[in-house]
Length: 346
Image 1 (cartoon, rainbow, N blue to C red):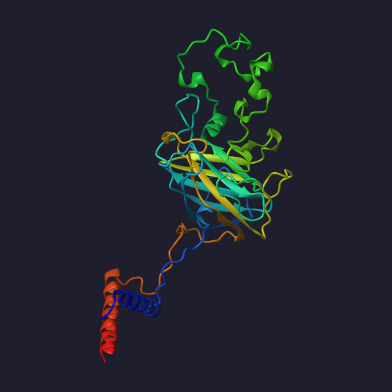
Image 2 (cartoon, rainbow, N blue to C red; image 1 turned 90 degrees about the vertical axis):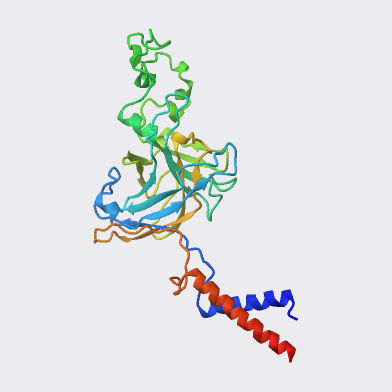
């Protein structure tokens, strides 16, 4: 009699032999590498429609909900982002795209939240925790905000959303300014403590929609001083899709900034927020680390390259239907068991 354990052993042996003979690996994950291509002309830092972007390889990076620190939203909406990168002798630019049905670029009302995206770089050797780093493993984060982008075009305030509102005057402001009163018209800056403390959220006019911040773990997010905010950003929402360009000099005088040398490979991670889904702060979608490598010149041929994603390698018989392979394996296993049983009876 053939025991059950012997049957399982024989089956596993035959399965391993079949996979080996058919050259079918079980599965292997291919890492994602974002390649930055070199350009000789001006970087298209304000033009996501530039043909240069369509001539370089696009990398699709999967995202998932941040599920480590509370508060969290497990049902985040952004499942992936597409990234491209360019560089010249002075700057690097990264274009990030993702699908979003609504353009959420206002946070004036308390019930509204913004769309946003961020790229993150380690400030230490190796790879710290991909979600905001860790103690002793700081990260540099470039955080683009849709409402800051909108404010640069035309600052939004309560009267923007409620044009029929009436205010006699704002206390401590120039009484002649009326509804136009803002930080610049306040006669006593002590009544604007956020602005006096250097809080970028209280700035009367944003110079860039990107906030340059440092983090070393959850709850440690710290904005760099106003004079050290050196990341440029430009975003466009069109056809239910955001396209955001980050750009900065390859090197920086700020010690807390990521530095780039074109002969090295770096790590980069992404995060995204969907304002319509109530996502903010730690309620976001994040990626794990992917590689950022500086490559050669932009290809000459103008064509839309295929997306590069995390793939599963398969053997040359991948086109064979799975049921055929399964039947073949079970047939071999059955034959082996018959031979084995006969040998036991002799």
